[in-house]
Image 1 (cartoon, helix red, strand yellow):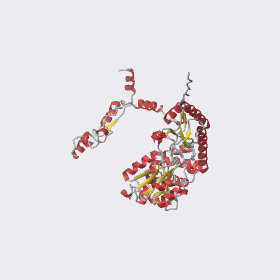
Image 2 (cartoon, one colour):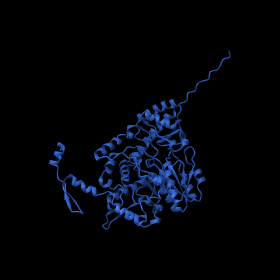
Image 3 (cartoon, rainbow, N blue to C red):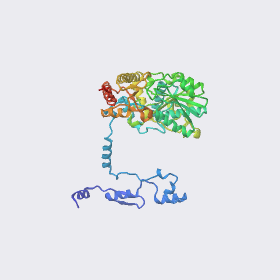
Image 4 (cartoon, rainbow, N blue to C red):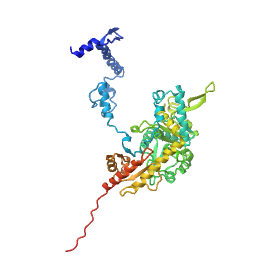
Amino acid sequence: MSSIETVLTRFAIPIECTNARERETRGGRRGALAILDRVSYLPNSDDDRREMLGRLGLSSLDELFSVIPDSLRDPRIDLPPPLGEQDLVSEVERIAARNRPLSAFDSFLGAGVYRRFIPAIVRASIARPEFYTAYTPYQAEASQGTLQTIFEFQSMICELTGMEVANASLYDGATAAAEAMVMTVQATNRDRFAVADTVHPETLRVLRTFAEGRRIEIDLIPTTDGRVTVDAVRTVLDERHAGVLVQQPSFLGTVDDLAPIPGAAHAAGALAVCSTDLIACAVLAPPGGLGFDIAVGDGQPLGIPPSFGGPHVGCLAARAALVRRMPGRLVGLTSDSDGRRAYTLTLQTREQHIRREHATSNICTNHALMALAATAYMAHMGAGGMRAVAATSARRAHHLAAQLADIDGLALAYPDAPFLWEFVLRCGDASRFVAQLRRSGIIAGVDLGRFDHRRRDQVLVCCTEMTPPDAIDRYVDAAREAAGAFRPVVVPSVARVPS
């Protein structure tokens, strides 16, 4: 016996475990592990599975799953051998160390996910265990604190969007837009929906996924120079359309005159939906003030980090007349039998309650933790703070755009269109431009060719309050160098002199 085994044998603490069937007790390490050999994570034994298959008239699991194509049920997965906990933690840490935070770069990414300043109070609020252990609470009525934070979130979203009622939050901006589309269909009993082609392409994909299962036809509204016009909306809309969706600012960063669009939609008997940036609502006319029926948006800019694209929080607000068609949950303010203020879930027409197949949606919860982050952010920043964030972001974006437009080989795609903090830059070959600036430690923006091959020469560039002036200077210098490297060399022709 080795010296190590001697020490372990002499000083080990006996471990007792009882086998419930045999009522026997064993001591020591071997006995402690013996029970694990008889306890499986799978609740069904081989005999159980054979009995169930027999009841179904099947002979094997392969026969049970035969309706699934072979290409989709290959159980062989190329995984490395299993590791112990210590080795596994080390391996995961090694893999995680390959990640680079956005703060390690000069980042000009936008396109719906933004790096904005997050006050410490936001992180402190969502770190409280009573909130993060129930980040999507199913029984929110059990906690008045959770219900109050949701009520405050709803109230603030109404203030930002200019709407009369908001729900407790959805999963993200794209699903909020899809739920709004379903609302318009249910409200009008029509089966078509019009969408401006400057709506975020990923939102459009989610809309089409929702529409396919509900037999809703989606029509695109063409835009001119990156902007939607009321004439284009009128051309597409007819008596078959339930609603129209536009985005402000658009996916391309442009700011449109949306005031005439709700009137055009209502003239066709349709509802008007606006997908909006909630930070932009602090400086632009809110959707409710323009006459829109529904406003949706993504709350990620409100104190939620980019985090590889999620989790986010979706926002949906509407006119009071549409409250009974709103998806998800709503929290109301009332009083208890003693006259004290109380919060409660109200108007619960979700599928898990009374409506079943006639429910407004199949959403039975909400992203309460992310909604809490957004609530803490809005409460801390206030209207003035959010306006300052928007103004700073816009100033820096316009400063960068003006300098880039002066570089030979670069140009603004929509020089006459107003924008806030995002703009489209023409740069010849977007993928090469982005790759070259990345080598300089700069994330130049989003290559729009990934969404539309016709935009392979365009990059969507974004500035926020987190974009320092020296990062803008480095971007301009790197862009100037990249534009020079991509500029074709023209060899002047030499005139031949007759001999």
